[in-house]
Picture (cartoon, helix red, strand yellow):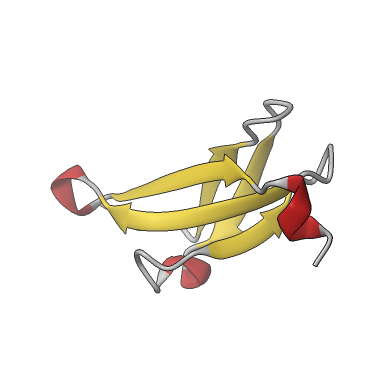
Length: 69
């Protein structure tokens, strides 16, 4: 099975499909931050171990107060 160089995830705010590089996911269980390409909502991404050596990507919106810091 080939390993993808990009992983896709859905923005929880607008539903747009974004992507993140395989290299960016190397630090599992560590929060990473991105903005949705479409709506620019701040997102927190946490890569985690999944079934069959796959990666689960937990995506959530950042609270507005953390964006203002």
